[in-house]
Length: 586
Image (tube, rainbow, N blue to C red; front, side, top):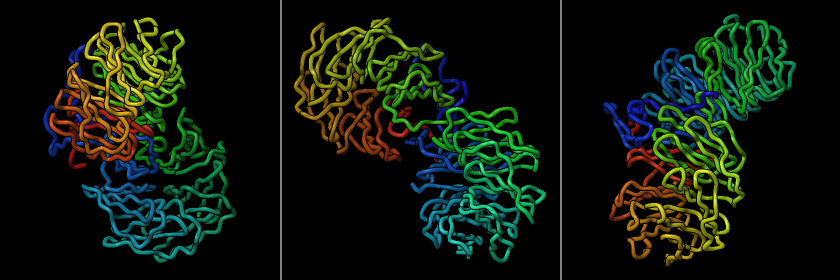
């Protein structure tokens, strides 16, 4: 199986390695020695957002940027998210090799990093698509409608480009030899004084540019287009692909890399371009290399690839799919969702599991150790045995929306048409049908003592063999339920609704939430967390509910954790959030 991961460093999150003495024991985070600037907060671990550019400093740190202000760094031990302070899409990144970075993007955005990210004022509002510099006092950025701006060490200034076509990339060998390429076969060169157009016989859209030590300029574009400029003439090169190429970078005349759509990677060995295709990869948008055995590519969704001189490794690849559930067992954490999406975190790396089915997966439940169940559309049932997922159950049942269990022979599922099922270790069987409306959530404090919630404010309680309706006091949909005991149960739903059961009655609680709450989890009667629409997160301390800023506007569908400083939340577009120990300085 390919490695598809975002690794979490010790400083960035938690020292996981020594935390589990046994697969059968609950996972307890071991924070080890505290980082220099410890901060407990929410951070985005994964998202389906595109990464569009990558740059690094040889022997040091590599950075990747993308949509909605997304940025990651890696020091060789994994990829860690960074807070850039903006939601603007980033298209390009460049650094001076001394710790100073420039990232450019939509609406003339320029963010500068020098230990912290900060936004810089620019004289343009057009989208900036690429950035390159010869030093931190001579940085060029190009973009839409022929836009070129230059940073002189103190401010950004507009330069005359002589064109109105979009300029998609910029790269140079010195402050007096800089190239910009764009649509309609456009190639510009800056000689230290002014930009001049280099005539080309082509009309293709050019997306990327790089020059080798001999002065040969390589330009890539749509439909697998690659041309080389010797300084006096253009030569079209055979790429072997018709896929659009998005970027090009090299380390020598015999090691040049071009990347593009459908996972296309081309390597030029000095004589010809040789293709590699990364399976199940949609778009590769940026490439950077330190040497022929250290090459990085980034793309969508959240893809980061690294070449080690022998093979391409998938260090991160997330999903565009909406994630509906998250749950852990032992040291394993899983997220499941749309079209069979399954992500696995082993406390060292997130990995996208091989696809087993295309049905939506709505819920996960597991036990300490290796056992985990996923259920969903059409009664689809998968079981993880510690190594792989396999389909289980042959009985035809309706769609399951939530499950809860006590061991692998006693799992309860609820879903469409108000039906309730029980899994006995081999198959599902009908265990009740107290209502015709959809049931969304199920939870129980002990075998034979089960609560379920659903449409119209319905709540049912199983004691023995009888499902008894309970008065909720509300008529909107209730979407999830959790409790610390039979006398302390919480249910959440539409319009920020939170209900509490004290063993006798259900009562509506005051909360700051107004959006739909999809998921709830807790650690004690006075330590409960709920998540919902538009990044809503609220927490209960035993007295009142309060809001928390989780840093995303995506809908959050589920939440789970081992403690109040080891929490995972998942949601739309492959979003995975973590609440715990993170490095406050990055």
